[in-house]
Amino acid sequence: MESDERAIRELIATWLAASKDGDIGKMLSLMADDVVFLVPGRPPLRGKAEFAATQAALSELSLEASSEVQEITVFGEWAYAWTQLTVVATPRSGGRPIMRAGPTLSILRKQQSVWLLVRDANMLAVQSA
Image (cartoon, rainbow, N blue to C red; front, side, top):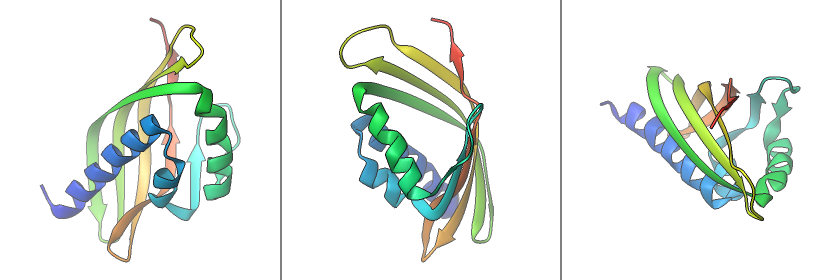
């Protein structure tokens, strides 16, 4: 495995751990300033500030996520990663967990020797238990 692919896999693992821990600062450090997130049924989420604002609403949930990398392709300072993502969100106050799963496609850019997320599209759909 090439060092760039290994670094991108580490970024994905770090993202999942930071999501679980609610570490918004760590997640923000993995993104470019002009990051854009695309999700079904919502307008694009643009920039770190919008991302951080949406994460506050998730503080009431415990998140468990797993990601299976399907493909990573590197083109110089650019790369894309296709994963199969599963997220289980459980209300901290009790209640039934909600599982969402589906493919994601992320575009990354290497800046000052560090890979950063610049675009992310996910097609997560609610799964029956």
